[in-house]
Image: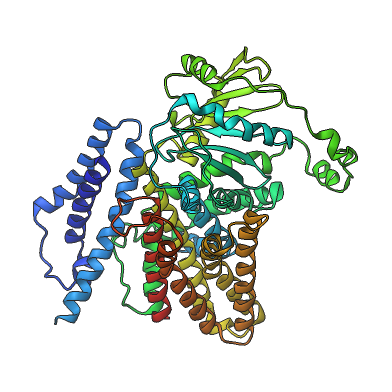
Length: 92
Length: 486
């Protein structure tokens, strides 16, 4: 359960990071504008919240849990973003 | 200056990475499988049902005839008690490579008639010795050092685009671009895992790189005839007295180690060791309470509490991950798989970058042939091992060895086929054929499992069988897609 929650929070944080990155926006052919402050703060807040929760609920395995969830989230967000970019390219 | 450093690190990253990468691909792949060695053994013995009744300590004595037989054969048998990962009681012994086991019903103590198999521990042995003993261990430890060098140089190369490129995966871009993205996405986020495994793995096997005796002395002993061979086999066999009842001893051991903290009972000729389970915590202490095998009286309680042994135990605990729950073990597995993907994609990039300039050279063809043999060839051999387990007759003599031979024959054949096709300038066909066969074997593993397992139900609860079949299916689909895109 904790792993899943950590994974969700990291994924949310990384998705917000992608929305703040011009290179990622260009790749998915999304409109480039100044990212909202919610995204700019949220990308760090989600990752820190995941880390805090890991330490709070499972202190022994917290580092492993957070690092593993972060790695898998990067993979999930990259794959999701690639699918989104492909979809937008095909639907044009 | 910085560009100069990056260029130099690029050279180091490419050459060390490719040279050690083909071996490290196998190490990461077998390591990922070894995380679930107990579960794989259960898949490889389909006669043993997925669930079992709760354990009753009173039935432990029913395993003693099997233990005695093994002791009389000069083996060192041990009983593994039921755990979260395996609800069955098993009598095991090490045959020099794998742990062979006989399963028992944990409530009635009846022996389950299961096929003999090399089991999941085959991959564990392959992971750290490549089945060549101490010399294999040394080579793997050196490869671990090469991994640290490759990771360090890789970080320097990718430092500039570490954050902007972290999430960038363009599978439909030009081939080289797509493979580079796969390499970065499989490598960068999993760096903490890769560094941790490289460091702890090399630390655990440090004695092979820094042996307590000189290299020359160990080289000389290689050619010195062993005096051990003079002793006849008859003289080596010990006489085994009847063993004492185990339940009271288990209860006594639990008073020292804690309730349900005994994981194994090891039988030696002069003592019986009730050992702490590996699942008790991150420190792999192997603390044990010893009893006499003659009358069962208490001998000693052994625990090594020094800081040096604690460091060793922690390194082993982190590397083996036997104390973790299934969630964290899946993370280890997926991270290991991504490590293998990192090395596979790195090798492909290395070859792609040099194909135009050196594609006709013999050394290039040799390198590509080895890459075909090591990447799809190794995975083909792994699938062949699983197929052989289900297709070889159950009554076959030396069945575990036959499974192992199937693995190595298929690996050898795919490596030779890859090399021949590369030397005849048909490397693309080599990749395509091996990936397609791999895809077919993986996709059809589920039907094979359903056809060769009794009491099978498609709508069963998630079990080791379903998880193994699903992983093979995913591997098959990915292989077919890569073969299609080549």
